[in-house]
Image (cartoon, rainbow, N blue to C red; front, side, top):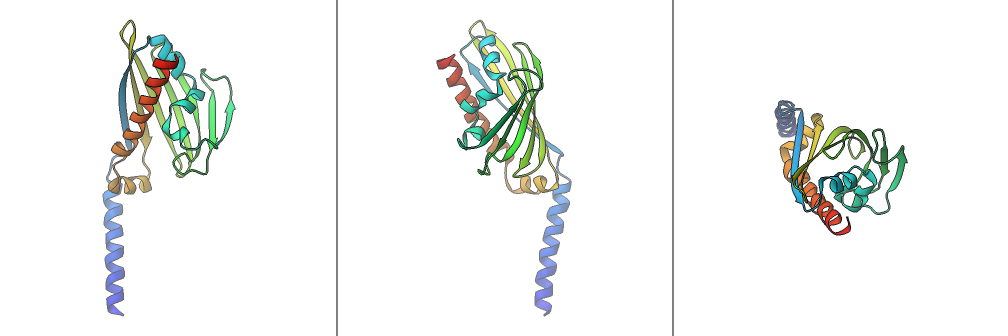
Length: 181
């Protein structure tokens, strides 16, 4: 009986230590990736501002070709909402809204995740002219971390995992814009 109590005590102690360490972690994470696209700024901006184009380059959206989608508003304008629901845990369920647009320069979205875990994130796409036919596209993703996400962050490197997916998506974006215009 005392051995079982010791084991239970050790397990509870480990859980408490993990929760304490997790609670002291930063409250949000920002992941940023960048790519150079051989197209004019206006071409890149006009393609990227359309949330529906994410179907052709966003790795998370492409994870489930059978996901249910719902749209509200006019794509490419502030207030447009792209909602999705997928059985694939990588895609999950949620909605993304265009919250700010600055012509040929800046796109901001808010993503409201429902599944697999509830959270709210901000996406910023910064579009800069390098020269007449070359654009630097920077994609930033900022997400607030609740306690459960902080615990997960102790064991999984979100920067590496999500950053790799973002980079993959950026390569798709580059290919689509450069080859399909």
